[in-house]
Structures are given as C-alpha cells and as structure tokens.
Length: 575
Image (cartoon, rainbow, N blue to C red):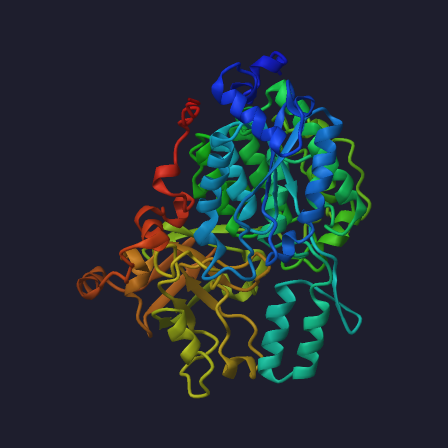
C-alpha cells in the first residue's frame, strides 16, 4: 500500500495562518500570545483541533470535560499544538423531537469549524447516537487527518441483583408495570440503578453500533470503541488518540485514504455481527455518500445474508457491552469475521484492519460467538412493496418469530399524539393480530424522524400477556429496542407515500423471508384516497423550515441535499 511523502513544517495548513510574514499572520501570532502561548508552542507544529461534544446536559459525554485534557496531553507529548473547539452536543435523552433533527447541523458545523480555523488535523470526540455519524460526515467532507475518540459505554445497570440494560430493560419493565406485574416502587428503584456511570448505552443501541462501525471503517484506534467510559483504559486511549493524530498529520493520512467501498462493506459486516441498530443504515448511507460511495439499502440486505449475529448483547442477545469488553471487544469480534471480511483497508494507526485484529484474543466464546454458532441467523432485513416502494427496515433478530410472516388488519394512527391518546383505552378494538400503523413520524412529518418506531402494545393486550405485535411506521427506533417493528418506511407519509393512505381495517401482509410488505388495497381505491391527502404543516421560517426543504428520505441517508457530494470547499482566503 503506497504511502504519501512525510509533510514538512511549511506544508502544514496552519502555516498559512502563522508562518507567513505579513500583517495578518502578525495578528494571528499576537493573539495566540494574548492567550499566554509562545511561538515555541505552535511554530512548525501540527495544530490539532479537538472537536468536543461535551455539555452539562449530555450524560453520555459527561466525562469529556476531563478526557479532553488527556487528549491535549497526548498532543503535547507528540509535538502538536491542541485547540479545543466546542460543538453542539446532541444529547440523545433530552433533545426533542429528536437528535436526528440536528445530525446534519453538527456535520456542517464540524466541516466549517475545520475549514475556517488554522487546523491541520482533528480528534473527534463523540459517541452519543448521532454525534458519531455527524462528526465523521463533516470530517469526510473536509478530508483533513481525523481520528475518532468514542465516549465508551456506561457500566452495567443493577436492580435487585439483576443486570439492567439501558433502553431494552426500560421498555421491558414499562410493559410489566402497565400490565400490573411490578409495582411503582420497583419502577422507582430501577430508576436509581439503570444508569450507574457516564457513557453511552451499554446495550447494542445506536451509540455502540456506530462507534463499532467507526472502528471497523478505520477511524478509531484498535479496540477503542469497546472500552467502558469509566475504565482507566479510556483515559489512556484518549491520550493515545492525541499522540496518533499528530503523526497522522505528518503522514497526511486522511479520510479519503481510509473510506473505500471495501471499508464500508466491512463496517456493514461488523454492524450485522453486532446485531446493531437499524439506525446504522441511515447513517452509513450518509457517511458513504459523503465519500463518493453510492451505498444503497439493498447492500445491507445482501451482506445480512452472509453474516449472522455473533455478539451476545441485548436486545438480540442477553448480555451487555461491559461483558463484550471483557470477552475481547471489537477486535475479537472482527477476528471472528476475518473469513468474510475484506480486511485490506487502511485504518488510522497506519495498518490495515486485518493487521489490527488477526492476533486478537477471544476470552469468552458465549459472548463473542463463532460463525457456526451464532446468536441469531439474521440481524436485519430490507422489505419492499406497495407500502414502501423505496424500502423499509426490520430487525428479525429482535422480533417474535411468529410475526415474520403475518397478515392482519391495520390499526392506523395519524400521528404520535393520536396514538398516545388512544392506545391504552380499555375499549380499544384491537387483537394480537392487528398491525399497528403510525403515520407522519418521518424526516419531514415529525419532524426529524424520532425514535417512535417501537410503538407501544395496547394496555388491554399487555394484561392478556401479549408482548409483541407487528408495528409499522416511517419513524426510527432506538437500537436498544426490540419487537416486530418495521421502520423507515419510504417514502414517508408526509410526502404522500402510501403509508399516508392506510386506514384502520385495511389488510397488511408481511413476509420477511420474501422481503415483502404489502397494503392489500387496489390501486383505484388508493388513487381516490390520494386525492384527499394534504401535506403537513411546515413553518415559514427557522431551522425547521430549512430542514424540511432540504432533507432527503430515509433510504437516501437523510442528509441535506446541499451537503451531498464529494466537492471539497475551497480554502478560505486570508487577507
């Protein structure tokens, strides 16, 4: 694999700001001195941005206030000059209606922070669901040397001697509370024990899925994505990221050297083996297309048939990310996958993926299974039909098998408020065979495509012991969720997709093996209904207006149309 010539100090991008003998460089150097730094701190050295997504309301990144100092320590050790650049935090638990509304905002902010400042390379500090794809999308578009520092999963939850997993056990025990099987006191005790440290969800949610994908694609130091946030190894890894990015600048190792069709395929294979979040499909499509790789939904379906679920982690398995780390972490899982991986793509440490994982130890055969003894046969499935001609997503590994081939009447709701007002009525006309349908929860309809797709089971059915039903929406769902949920229906209801025309009582047929989703209504009736359809309200100003005007549909990655493409924006003039 060819390597670029090592850069010289006067070839650094930051040299344009600091190394030229003119009026503007005088101003730049004097302002650095205003901050207490001398020329010896930065002259002739790589200037390294640390894009930090810490905030006081982001528990997943709460430790980043300390970790950024470890990154700086590593940069100083390697002879670089660190600059912390705060960026929007995207706190998954608190941002409404959804952090997905702001993923592209952070991607744009990342690209422009790097473009407009005297930056030679960047450490991207993220992990909470949308921060990983957003930071990488911005870095791919900017194409400066970049390394990703994952936040790491939190410690296992605990209640009454039972291990609790964020998300998965919340939904499980909320259903039991509604069914009357646990008490309010039990529920309150769980609240104290389910989130015991900083860090991302310790189940295989979107956060752990996307940091694993980032590592498999080549953006993390080997094993970095598996380290729990509270482990001292996370501190050491943070400093190592700081040291390595300085060398990456001298080597001119950029995202365009790392992201290739083979790297994207290996990231998808990793996603499948982890039993990863369905959200990864939207994010990977957006990331790949920023690199000029025309990734389509069908590629996920092709690779899902080749790679079973090997990681025994909730919701597809039974254990948690802390167990995965002790069993060998992502390097061990990727070693398991070597027979089906390409493995030849370059990674941030200058070695190929195969070189990074071929000697990885595997400490627990139950947590990280071999290919011939998987947790589940299939992680995800892409369905098509008249209800979703552009495709929709299902996670068969987390669904009741009886619902993988099903025909039943629709119970349709126009939006989430409508569903919430009706779903727990004792007189609701619903049976376990009904198909619950939620409309107007997609990119434009909600707006922001929130994680509403794990639609609640009606209370009257919960009391009868029902714990899964077929559910369909144009929303996403948390990677920690489970159940027979069909998601990302495209085109969404809010742009006039067939989903908008579904009425209660219509028959819907699903056949996962055949990859089929059909609304059993004739075209003439659908045409009559379409004449009565009206688009939803969109405000005339503000970010919401811009979002609705430019957002792509789920099967296209939900990027903004004006951020797509591989054109590198010109360097800013300095006058």
